[in-house]
Length: 475
Image 1 (cartoon, rainbow, N blue to C red):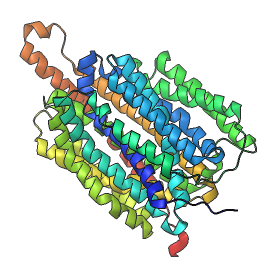
Image 2 (image 1 turned 120 degrees about the vertical axis):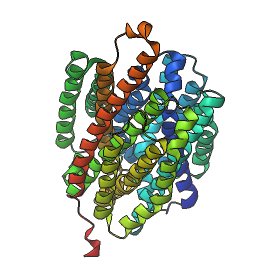
Image 3 (image 1 turned 180 degrees about the vertical axis):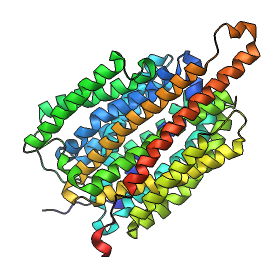
Image 4 (image 1 turned 90 degrees about the horizontal axis):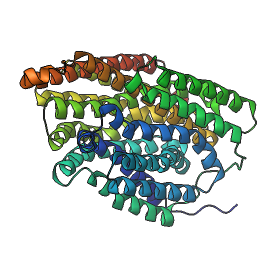
């Protein structure tokens, strides 16, 4: 068989640029959501669809990426995914109402969902087992760099030229990644050539789609309303049927036996918990700073900048610790720091010094850096190379579904507590200043309750981290 020829450096660059622009697309949006809400006169729960809808599409697509990677040419898959992502970004850029903006985000999610499932698979395919920490270390640097740039750049764009340009600024980067993919990407993932089981696709689409959609409705209807719970329960039933189907057919769409590997399962759960912490705080803090503290988008972005820089600087260190077979210790330290900092953040008030919020956010990012990417490395290292594509998809499914449920729960708690503490509408006419103050106070109560729940989830992560094992290679 002829050895595949490609430039590994340029191929890896395509994946890293794609991952960077996908992450930038998320972090740059976080500080713009209050401006989008004001521009289109939509509520918090409606605006969250820009994130939950994105996760919904990703959650539906990720289970199928393992089969896509096994079946189709890697270069073609990456190129088509980047092209789809580019089209979605252009739609969001030119949108003049919320429906068009959301459509653009959902098209983006189709491209990003496939890319998300492929990135780790491709990187682990081009690096040997002896270099196993490099893929996640490289992605860790990207996941640190994008948040370092995103909030501040997003804040500047929103305050100066308008929120549409948070999408416009990424169009040239996506176009560059697409051109590079056409010239430098190669078919590096081994192919099995299995047929797609149509029933599995139907079951997973209805199952994961129903679960994620039902959970996303909790911010509007609560957890016990049929609009949310009934759809989520139907989704769970179809997911159970999908799981049964995967175990009963010869060539499953996603090889679920990977979850029998304890390190993989535990590390995937930790990845989900870290993702919940990251997404929730990235959404909650800008709302707090802009709506409760009357800061501009740029000011809130600058407040988050030190934490993002910390993440960028420490990412290589977290990767090297895993490479030295200290993954369990690294992740336990990271989840503990992440949980403690989230607990401290839960005590914020209307008068908490901004420097303290910036410091606690930075401390939280220290924890995230030592938890998220090392957990991904340990998960992938626990599997044989022929199951890397399934491991990447399985890890992403766990993270995406867990993060969607966790984030919806946090936002639902924040919104319901804030609503319960809101002043009566009659107070607006009687005392406008007091009404505004009480509304800010209500948002504080909601923020605190949400962060307390995030802290509890973090404690679950600490327990999970203690169950991990380091690789046997040092023994």
